[in-house]
Each structure stands twice: as structure tokens, then as C-alpha cells.
Amino acid sequence: MNSNRPTNLDLTTIELPLPGKASIIHRISGFILFFAVAFMLCALAASLESAESFAELKSVFDNGLVKFITWGILSALGYHLVAGVKHLLMDMGIGETKEGGRTGAIITLVCGVIVIILAGVWVW
Amino acid sequence: MVTSVTNLGRSGLYDWVVQRVTAVILALYTLFLLGFVIASPDMQYGQWQGLFACIWMKVFSLAALISICAHAWVGMWTISTDYLKAAAIRFAFQLVCAGFLFVYLVWGIDILWSV
Image (cartoon, rainbow over all chains, first blue to last red; front, side, top):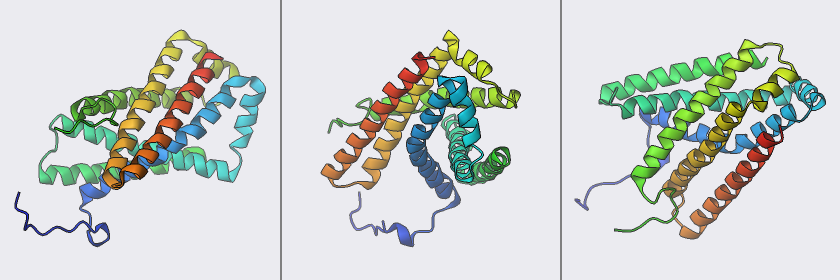
């Protein structure tokens, strides 16, 4: 490799192209989901333990903060799923060109926003 | 060739396949649960408990749980090798991730099998 190539890895000075933005949000949402699993398991445990804990869990969802956290987790999950589907489609060779990558990123971002809004409507 | 010792499959290609197979399982599980919850707006405990008491649901849930662990490991490993250049810090981060996932796995199995 030509060692005289200019390199700039200072991420703060690089404007990410659209597919790059779709990709980094996919990564961030995955990172969030890693910790969100703890909340999901907590809720699953409470929902299955007994009829009382099930009812208690339901009433906990009336709390504004719990609603917000739930919406956040659902948003991360929804976006991660949408972007993941795009990934699988690209693995199959769909939209692999530069233009296709841009179109795919736009579709992913639009679908992501729709899913996040729907999740918000569902929670509230 | 340098042999990597911390990635899941000791090979990038194996990790790549694991990431995709587990992704499909998790997507199916997520959509199934979403559909189940949406189909019963006024969910009662008996319905919910009945679902998780089915053996096929236990199999499906355990598959999803194991998939979460493998999928998250590959993802967090990738993040750690991308951003954490100091070997000690990277290894410490990976240890914490492995700890989390081990707890998730045991905790999840306990929840599923106590139904």
C-alpha cells in the first residue's frame, strides 16, 4: 500500500455520508440494546411470576419515566431491526452500488422514523 | 497469520454467519411477540403465562436468548476492536460484556424454566 496516502481519522472533522449515518445509528442502537436486555428480562420475569406481579407490572407502565424508557428501548429495537433487514438485503446483493447504498440508507432512516413514531403512539 | 482469540468463532467468516443467523431468529421472535401482544390489546396473565408455558415457546424463547448472547457478543466484540486500541482496556471491556451476557443467559433460562 502507498504509505504516502493522506489519512484523516479524526472523526469529528468527517461528515458521514448518509449510509454512514444509517450505519452508526445501527451500531449505537445495538449498543443500547445490549443494556436494554436487562430491563426486558426484568419485565419478563415480573410478567410471568404471578398474576399479582403481572398486574403490578402493568400499573408500572403508567409511570411517565417507565413509558419513556420503554419507548427508547422499542425505538432502538425497531431501528436496529429495520437497519438489520437492510444489511441482510445488501448481503444478498440488493442495492450494493453507491447509489443503491444511498437509497437503502434513506429507506432505512425513513422506516426507522416511522417505527419510532409508531412505538411512541403505542406506548402513550 | 495472526489468530484472534477473543472473537466468537475464531474466524471472521464464522462470526459473519453467526451474526446473520441469530439476527433472523431475533427478528422472527420480535415480530412474533409484537404480533401476539397487538392481537390481544387487553392481555390477561393467563394468556401470557399460557404462551410461555408451551414447550415450543420455551424452545423459541431459548433460541432467542442464545441468539441474543451470540449476536451481542459479535457486535460488542466488533465495537471493542474498532474503538479500543489499548489491549488491556479492550480485554477488560470484553470481559464485562461476557459477564453481562452470562448473567443474561442464566437469568433468562431461570425465568423461562420457572413458568
